[in-house]
Amino acid sequence: METVKGYRKPSHGLFRFIPDAWVPYAELMRLDRLSGFWAFYWHYLIGFGFAINIRPFSNDIDLKALVVLLAYLGLWATVFRGITCTWNDNLDQDFDRQVARCRVRPIPRGAVTTLQAHFFTAALIAAGACILYPYGHSTLFHAAVDSVFLFIYPFLKRFTDFPQVELGFGLSYAIFLVTAMVGKDPLAPLLDSSLNLSGRVSKVVDSPEAQSAACLYVAGILWSVIFDTLYAHQDYLDDLKAGVNGLAVRLGRRGTKPACYAMAIVQVYCLTLAGHLAGFGGAYYAISCGGDALLLAWMIWATDLEDGDSCAWAFGRGSAYVGASISAGLMAEFWSRKYGF
Image 1 (cartoon, rainbow, N blue to C red):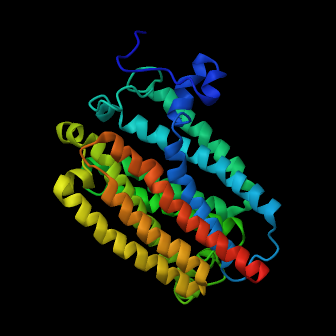
Image 2: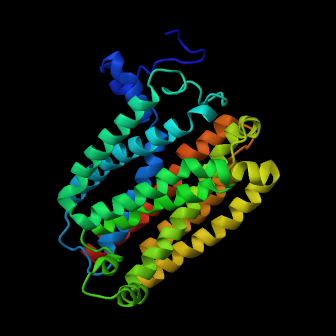
Image 3: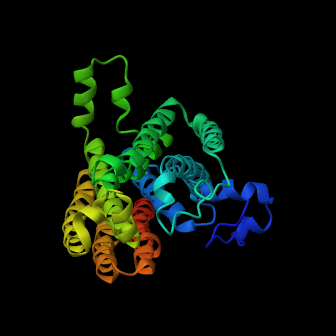
Protein backbone atom coordinates (compact mmCIF):
# COMPACT_ATOMS: atom_id res chain seq x y z
CA MET A 1 0.00 0.00 0.00
CA GLU A 2 1.29 3.42 -0.93
CA THR A 3 1.88 5.93 1.83
CA VAL A 4 -0.91 8.50 1.96
CA LYS A 5 0.30 12.04 1.32
CA GLY A 6 0.68 13.94 4.59
CA TYR A 7 0.79 10.85 6.81
CA ARG A 8 3.68 10.39 9.21
CA LYS A 9 3.83 7.42 11.54
CA PRO A 10 3.86 8.53 15.20
CA SER A 11 7.27 8.02 16.78
CA HIS A 12 6.71 9.08 20.38
CA GLY A 13 5.67 7.22 23.51
CA LEU A 14 4.53 3.63 23.05
CA PHE A 15 4.71 3.99 19.26
CA ARG A 16 8.47 3.52 19.58
CA PHE A 17 7.93 -0.02 20.87
CA ILE A 18 4.75 -1.53 19.40
CA PRO A 19 4.81 -3.59 16.18
CA ASP A 20 3.91 -1.75 12.98
CA ALA A 21 0.77 -3.87 12.61
CA TRP A 22 -0.55 -2.44 15.89
CA VAL A 23 0.05 1.20 14.98
CA PRO A 24 -3.23 1.81 13.11
CA TYR A 25 -5.25 0.41 16.03
CA ALA A 26 -3.36 2.56 18.53
CA GLU A 27 -4.10 5.52 16.26
CA LEU A 28 -7.80 4.60 16.22
CA MET A 29 -7.70 4.85 20.02
CA ARG A 30 -5.95 8.24 19.61
CA LEU A 31 -3.07 7.08 21.80
CA ASP A 32 -0.89 9.49 19.84
CA ARG A 33 -3.05 12.48 20.86
CA LEU A 34 -3.29 13.18 24.59
CA SER A 35 -5.49 16.26 24.31
CA GLY A 36 -8.50 14.10 23.50
CA PHE A 37 -7.80 11.87 26.49
CA TRP A 38 -8.01 14.88 28.78
CA ALA A 39 -11.25 15.99 27.11
CA PHE A 40 -12.70 12.73 28.45
CA TYR A 41 -10.74 12.42 31.68
CA TRP A 42 -11.46 15.89 33.12
CA HIS A 43 -15.12 14.90 33.40
CA TYR A 44 -14.16 11.80 35.40
CA LEU A 45 -11.94 13.86 37.69
CA ILE A 46 -14.76 16.35 38.20
CA GLY A 47 -17.24 13.54 38.80
CA PHE A 48 -14.90 11.94 41.30
CA GLY A 49 -14.33 15.21 43.16
CA PHE A 50 -18.08 15.73 43.30
CA ALA A 51 -18.79 12.16 44.44
CA ILE A 52 -16.42 12.19 47.41
CA ASN A 53 -17.80 15.53 48.62
CA ILE A 54 -21.56 14.88 48.53
CA ARG A 55 -23.39 13.26 51.42
CA PRO A 56 -22.36 10.99 53.00
CA PHE A 57 -18.91 12.61 52.96
CA SER A 58 -16.15 10.14 51.96
CA ASN A 59 -13.98 10.59 55.05
CA ASP A 60 -12.57 7.06 54.67
CA ILE A 61 -10.76 7.83 51.40
CA ASP A 62 -7.06 8.50 51.94
CA LEU A 63 -4.44 9.65 49.45
CA LYS A 64 -3.48 6.12 48.38
CA ALA A 65 -7.07 5.08 47.70
CA LEU A 66 -7.65 8.32 45.83
CA VAL A 67 -4.64 7.78 43.55
CA VAL A 68 -5.63 4.17 42.82
CA LEU A 69 -9.19 5.14 41.91
CA LEU A 70 -8.04 7.99 39.67
CA ALA A 71 -5.57 5.68 37.91
CA TYR A 72 -8.36 3.14 37.39
CA LEU A 73 -10.57 5.86 35.94
CA GLY A 74 -7.70 6.83 33.63
CA LEU A 75 -7.57 3.26 32.31
CA TRP A 76 -11.33 3.25 31.71
CA ALA A 77 -11.22 6.69 30.04
CA THR A 78 -8.48 5.45 27.67
CA VAL A 79 -10.50 2.40 26.62
CA PHE A 80 -13.80 4.27 26.42
CA ARG A 81 -12.25 6.99 24.31
CA GLY A 82 -10.87 4.26 22.04
CA ILE A 83 -14.35 2.76 21.66
CA THR A 84 -16.00 6.04 20.73
CA CYS A 85 -13.20 7.26 18.45
CA THR A 86 -13.07 3.96 16.53
CA TRP A 87 -16.85 3.97 16.11
CA ASN A 88 -16.83 7.60 15.03
CA ASP A 89 -14.00 7.08 12.52
CA ASN A 90 -15.75 4.09 10.99
CA LEU A 91 -18.99 5.95 10.43
CA ASP A 92 -17.29 9.18 9.34
CA GLN A 93 -14.76 7.66 6.95
CA ASP A 94 -16.39 9.16 3.82
CA PHE A 95 -16.43 12.62 5.41
CA ASP A 96 -12.88 12.17 6.69
CA ARG A 97 -11.56 11.59 3.18
CA GLN A 98 -12.75 15.10 2.30
CA VAL A 99 -11.14 16.85 5.30
CA ALA A 100 -7.40 17.51 5.14
CA ARG A 101 -6.78 16.89 8.85
CA CYS A 102 -8.73 13.61 8.89
CA ARG A 103 -7.88 11.84 5.62
CA VAL A 104 -4.69 10.36 7.12
CA ARG A 105 -6.62 8.50 9.85
CA PRO A 106 -6.28 4.68 9.69
CA ILE A 107 -9.63 3.90 8.04
CA PRO A 108 -9.66 6.63 5.35
CA ARG A 109 -6.08 5.86 4.38
CA GLY A 110 -6.83 2.11 4.12
CA ALA A 111 -4.70 0.83 7.01
CA VAL A 112 -7.78 -0.66 8.71
CA THR A 113 -10.89 -1.97 6.96
CA THR A 114 -14.45 -1.20 8.01
CA LEU A 115 -14.96 -4.76 9.27
CA GLN A 116 -11.68 -4.78 11.19
CA ALA A 117 -12.65 -1.52 12.86
CA HIS A 118 -16.02 -2.94 13.93
CA PHE A 119 -14.32 -6.02 15.42
CA PHE A 120 -11.86 -3.75 17.22
CA THR A 121 -14.74 -1.69 18.63
CA ALA A 122 -16.35 -4.90 19.93
CA ALA A 123 -13.07 -6.00 21.53
CA LEU A 124 -12.69 -2.64 23.27
CA ILE A 125 -16.28 -2.83 24.53
CA ALA A 126 -15.52 -6.24 26.05
CA ALA A 127 -12.36 -4.86 27.67
CA GLY A 128 -14.26 -1.89 29.04
CA ALA A 129 -16.96 -4.14 30.51
CA CYS A 130 -14.26 -6.16 32.28
CA ILE A 131 -12.75 -2.96 33.73
CA LEU A 132 -16.07 -1.76 35.18
CA TYR A 133 -17.56 -5.14 36.16
CA PRO A 134 -16.09 -5.12 39.71
CA TYR A 135 -18.03 -1.92 40.45
CA GLY A 136 -21.43 -3.49 39.91
CA HIS A 137 -24.41 -3.36 37.60
CA SER A 138 -25.25 0.29 38.26
CA THR A 139 -21.86 1.37 36.93
CA LEU A 140 -22.25 -0.87 33.87
CA PHE A 141 -25.72 0.58 33.28
CA HIS A 142 -24.35 4.13 33.28
CA ALA A 143 -21.51 3.09 30.96
CA ALA A 144 -24.11 1.69 28.56
CA VAL A 145 -26.13 4.91 28.65
CA ASP A 146 -22.97 6.95 28.08
CA SER A 147 -22.06 4.72 25.13
CA VAL A 148 -25.46 5.32 23.53
CA PHE A 149 -24.97 9.08 23.79
CA LEU A 150 -21.58 8.96 22.10
CA PHE A 151 -22.56 6.32 19.55
CA ILE A 152 -25.33 8.64 18.33
CA TYR A 153 -22.91 11.55 17.93
CA PRO A 154 -21.62 10.73 14.40
CA PHE A 155 -25.17 10.52 13.02
CA LEU A 156 -26.04 14.00 14.21
CA LYS A 157 -23.42 15.52 11.92
CA ARG A 158 -25.59 14.35 9.05
CA PHE A 159 -29.00 15.49 10.23
CA THR A 160 -28.63 18.38 12.74
CA ASP A 161 -26.43 21.35 13.53
CA PHE A 162 -25.98 20.26 17.14
CA PRO A 163 -23.60 17.29 17.33
CA GLN A 164 -21.49 19.19 19.90
CA VAL A 165 -24.48 19.16 22.26
CA GLU A 166 -24.78 15.38 21.98
CA LEU A 167 -21.03 15.08 22.56
CA GLY A 168 -21.49 17.15 25.72
CA PHE A 169 -24.26 14.79 26.89
CA GLY A 170 -21.83 11.89 26.55
CA LEU A 171 -18.69 13.46 28.00
CA SER A 172 -20.41 15.02 31.01
CA TYR A 173 -22.34 11.83 31.79
CA ALA A 174 -19.11 10.61 33.41
CA ILE A 175 -20.41 12.32 36.57
CA PHE A 176 -23.09 9.66 37.05
CA LEU A 177 -20.77 6.76 36.24
CA VAL A 178 -18.24 7.88 38.83
CA THR A 179 -20.82 8.53 41.56
CA ALA A 180 -22.09 5.00 40.97
CA MET A 181 -18.54 3.65 41.30
CA VAL A 182 -18.16 5.15 44.78
CA GLY A 183 -21.64 4.02 45.86
CA LYS A 184 -23.39 7.43 45.77
CA ASP A 185 -25.34 7.26 42.53
CA PRO A 186 -27.96 10.05 42.67
CA LEU A 187 -29.94 8.23 39.98
CA ALA A 188 -29.97 4.90 41.84
CA PRO A 189 -33.71 5.14 42.71
CA LEU A 190 -34.48 4.91 38.98
CA LEU A 191 -33.20 1.32 39.10
CA ASP A 192 -35.06 0.41 42.32
CA SER A 193 -37.55 -2.30 41.33
CA SER A 194 -39.37 -2.00 44.67
CA LEU A 195 -40.75 1.41 43.62
CA ASN A 196 -43.22 2.25 40.88
CA LEU A 197 -42.17 4.64 38.13
CA SER A 198 -43.59 7.79 39.75
CA GLY A 199 -41.99 6.84 43.06
CA ARG A 200 -38.60 6.40 41.41
CA VAL A 201 -38.79 9.73 39.63
CA SER A 202 -40.03 11.57 42.73
CA LYS A 203 -37.20 10.21 44.84
CA VAL A 204 -34.64 11.49 42.35
CA VAL A 205 -36.29 14.87 41.77
CA ASP A 206 -36.57 15.55 45.50
CA SER A 207 -32.94 14.66 46.24
CA PRO A 208 -30.57 17.65 46.73
CA GLU A 209 -27.67 15.45 45.62
CA ALA A 210 -29.48 14.57 42.37
CA GLN A 211 -30.38 18.22 41.81
CA SER A 212 -26.76 19.21 42.36
CA ALA A 213 -25.53 16.45 40.04
CA ALA A 214 -27.97 17.63 37.36
CA CYS A 215 -26.59 21.18 37.59
CA LEU A 216 -23.02 19.90 37.39
CA TYR A 217 -24.03 17.73 34.42
CA VAL A 218 -25.44 20.72 32.54
CA ALA A 219 -22.31 22.75 33.38
CA GLY A 220 -20.18 19.95 31.90
CA ILE A 221 -22.33 19.82 28.77
CA LEU A 222 -22.00 23.56 28.17
CA TRP A 223 -18.25 23.52 28.76
CA SER A 224 -17.89 20.65 26.25
CA VAL A 225 -20.06 22.44 23.67
CA ILE A 226 -17.92 25.56 24.00
CA PHE A 227 -14.51 23.95 23.57
CA ASP A 228 -15.63 21.54 20.83
CA THR A 229 -17.33 24.31 18.85
CA LEU A 230 -14.15 26.38 18.99
CA TYR A 231 -12.16 23.28 18.00
CA ALA A 232 -14.46 22.58 15.04
CA HIS A 233 -13.47 25.86 13.42
CA GLN A 234 -10.14 24.36 12.38
CA ASP A 235 -12.13 22.30 9.83
CA TYR A 236 -14.66 25.06 9.10
CA LEU A 237 -13.93 25.48 5.38
CA ASP A 238 -13.57 21.73 4.73
CA ASP A 239 -16.81 21.04 6.62
CA LEU A 240 -18.66 23.57 4.46
CA LYS A 241 -17.46 21.79 1.31
CA ALA A 242 -18.14 18.28 2.66
CA GLY A 243 -21.59 19.14 4.00
CA VAL A 244 -20.71 18.31 7.61
CA ASN A 245 -23.16 19.89 10.04
CA GLY A 246 -22.21 21.40 13.39
CA LEU A 247 -22.42 24.49 15.56
CA ALA A 248 -19.28 25.97 14.01
CA VAL A 249 -20.94 25.89 10.60
CA ARG A 250 -24.31 27.00 11.97
CA LEU A 251 -22.94 29.95 13.97
CA GLY A 252 -20.18 30.93 11.57
CA ARG A 253 -17.04 32.87 12.39
CA ARG A 254 -19.00 35.92 13.59
CA GLY A 255 -21.61 34.18 15.70
CA THR A 256 -19.50 31.59 17.52
CA LYS A 257 -17.83 33.71 20.19
CA PRO A 258 -20.97 35.62 21.29
CA ALA A 259 -22.77 32.27 21.61
CA CYS A 260 -19.86 30.80 23.57
CA TYR A 261 -19.81 33.75 25.99
CA ALA A 262 -23.56 33.34 26.56
CA MET A 263 -23.12 29.61 27.23
CA ALA A 264 -20.23 30.38 29.57
CA ILE A 265 -22.44 32.60 31.72
CA VAL A 266 -25.02 29.83 32.08
CA GLN A 267 -22.26 27.30 32.72
CA VAL A 268 -20.82 29.29 35.62
CA TYR A 269 -24.32 29.74 37.06
CA CYS A 270 -24.95 25.97 36.91
CA LEU A 271 -21.60 25.28 38.54
CA THR A 272 -22.40 27.73 41.35
CA LEU A 273 -25.90 26.29 41.84
CA ALA A 274 -24.45 22.76 42.01
CA GLY A 275 -22.23 23.85 44.90
CA HIS A 276 -25.13 25.56 46.68
CA LEU A 277 -27.38 22.49 46.45
CA ALA A 278 -24.58 20.18 47.64
CA GLY A 279 -23.56 22.47 50.53
CA PHE A 280 -20.01 23.06 49.32
CA GLY A 281 -17.79 25.72 50.88
CA GLY A 282 -15.41 28.52 49.99
CA ALA A 283 -12.70 26.41 48.35
CA TYR A 284 -15.14 25.19 45.74
CA TYR A 285 -16.60 28.61 44.98
CA ALA A 286 -13.22 30.33 44.80
CA ILE A 287 -11.32 27.76 42.72
CA SER A 288 -13.94 25.78 40.81
CA CYS A 289 -16.45 28.56 40.12
CA GLY A 290 -14.19 31.62 40.14
CA GLY A 291 -11.34 29.93 38.30
CA ASP A 292 -13.73 28.41 35.77
CA ALA A 293 -15.32 31.79 35.02
CA LEU A 294 -11.99 33.54 34.42
CA LEU A 295 -10.32 30.73 32.48
CA LEU A 296 -13.34 29.95 30.32
CA ALA A 297 -13.73 33.61 29.33
CA TRP A 298 -10.00 33.81 28.59
CA MET A 299 -10.10 30.61 26.50
CA ILE A 300 -12.90 31.99 24.31
CA TRP A 301 -11.22 35.39 23.96
CA ALA A 302 -7.78 33.94 23.16
CA THR A 303 -8.94 31.53 20.45
CA ASP A 304 -8.44 32.73 16.88
CA LEU A 305 -11.18 31.00 14.88
CA GLU A 306 -9.24 31.41 11.62
CA ASP A 307 -6.11 29.74 13.00
CA GLY A 308 -6.24 25.94 13.16
CA ASP A 309 -3.53 25.72 15.81
CA SER A 310 -5.39 28.19 18.01
CA CYS A 311 -8.62 26.17 17.68
CA ALA A 312 -6.70 23.01 18.62
CA TRP A 313 -5.30 24.88 21.64
CA ALA A 314 -8.84 25.60 22.84
CA PHE A 315 -9.64 21.88 22.71
CA GLY A 316 -6.38 20.89 24.38
CA ARG A 317 -4.48 23.14 26.73
CA GLY A 318 -7.08 25.93 26.87
CA SER A 319 -9.82 23.57 27.93
CA ALA A 320 -7.43 21.78 30.28
CA TYR A 321 -7.00 24.94 32.33
CA VAL A 322 -10.77 25.03 32.88
CA GLY A 323 -10.97 21.32 33.76
CA ALA A 324 -8.01 21.59 36.11
CA SER A 325 -9.61 24.55 37.90
CA ILE A 326 -12.93 22.79 38.48
CA SER A 327 -11.18 19.58 39.59
CA ALA A 328 -8.75 21.43 41.87
CA GLY A 329 -11.59 23.27 43.59
CA LEU A 330 -13.43 20.02 44.29
CA MET A 331 -10.28 18.38 45.64
CA ALA A 332 -9.49 21.44 47.78
CA GLU A 333 -13.03 21.25 49.12
CA PHE A 334 -12.51 17.58 50.01
CA TRP A 335 -9.20 18.04 51.82
CA SER A 336 -10.38 21.15 53.66
CA ARG A 337 -13.43 19.31 54.96
CA LYS A 338 -11.50 16.14 55.73
CA TYR A 339 -8.86 17.90 57.81
CA GLY A 340 -10.94 20.85 59.00
CA PHE A 341 -9.10 23.79 57.50
